Image 1 (cartoon, rainbow, N blue to C red):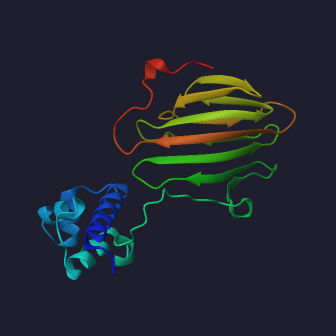
Image 2: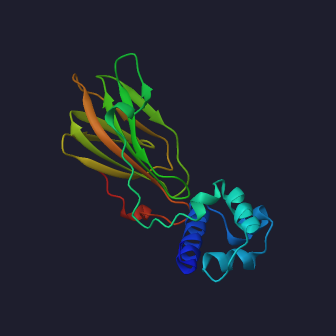
Image 3: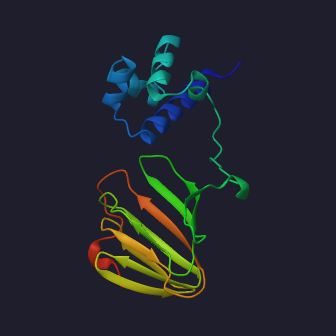
Length: 202
């Protein structure tokens, strides 16, 4: 039989982790679960011994099963996506493609992409929410990145970071294909990751 203190700690850790991942406040989780805010606080701080009904209500509010809440596992999460399971979320008739390699769940979103642009191809990106930044590294070829009205020409080995609240374009102005990796970072709050006056022009 599992030690009650270990079980209580596991429940508190899992509820807190899932609530934050879903960007829920203590008040909102309590409202959705139909319990008091004090009950949620007690569960998260491992000070409460929740009933089965309370566990079920909190699990339902978080969109998981009770088994997820009582899981004692403390190992760091490891996610692996094999090459054959990596989707191309954008392609062109010329053979360009954007592979979505990996990403995190809200509230703090991080995405990793692998891009291939055929000669002359372009991709226009919409403006992202405030605080979002993109980081690109050119693996091969020539890449033109336009942010707002300014174009930045990059070659193999170059990288760029920019505030993605403006519309932007990736283009291949060369006569052979290019390849670059891109990371998109979108924080779950209004915190700026990079102050605008510290962004360097490429």
